[in-house]
Amino acid sequence: MRGEPAELYEAASHLVSSGGKRLRPHMVVESCRLLGGTKSGALAAAAAVEMVHNFTLVHDDIMDNDDVRHGVPTVHRRFGTPVAILAGDVLFSKAYGVLANSRRPPDRTVRLVRRLAGACADVCEGQMLDLRMAGSRGAPTPGEYVEMVGKKTAALFEAACAMGAVCAGGGSGDEARLASFGRNLGIAFQITDDLMGVAGDPGATKKPVGNDIREGKKSLPVLMALGAARGAARRAITRPFGNPGAKKEELEAAVEAVRGLGIEGAVRDTARGYARRAEAALRPYGNGEAKESLEALLGFVVKRGA
Image (cartoon, rainbow, N blue to C red; front, side):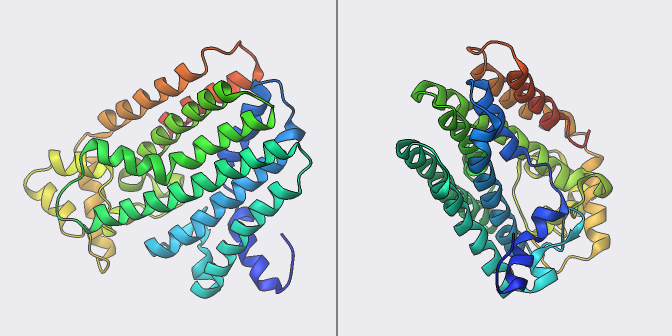
């Protein structure tokens, strides 16, 4: 991404150029191909989704005070918080410019913009729910947790797949089925991501393990860990929990305590349940390369970090 001032666009491109899985744009393309559309017909929407995703990462890292993303310094650490905020805003704005400038029937452009705008609002609402849960004294119910991750993470997965259906000229039924696939895949993804955040291998995740404990985030793995922990293990987890000034040694001890509780199997079983729901949404479609590609994502998501 190029423009002036150069530093702003360098900051906006920082995470994009550093790597990442590119799951969301891949889902746009494969959802389009599933319905007989072409890769070229989905590229503009795929690019817009990836720009919005990177916008959320920039702002999320600021809120979580994270230092590393994709194995490189986060945007606010590299360029400073004011520039990082502006970089995120540029990505957000450019995403809609890409959709507006693409060549497709106007009614499809409206549907794409509506989907992406709705997902952006959901992400903000989900982030707020996450902050509220972290600041509350009580523990959220499983339903409240799913509502939160359904907005914070799964909304953009849902939009990506629905937008792929729109790009292919699919009807409302196709859009709804692929949206369901994306939503359930996104929930499974976040559950696994939360597990990696408290019990993963830092070398594999390329992001700080234990940071969710320091931030006091009441993710499903954390709730399961606190429910199972007793004695010294519970003290090791609760000591740095929600403490921004927690020492590195305390976080490492908390992570080791979580790993020793044996909750990973139960967490992954929950993720697999949502993956099965996602798989069911694809059953009406015949076998083919695009369907196989989408189904392969399910296996990747639930096995991450295993």
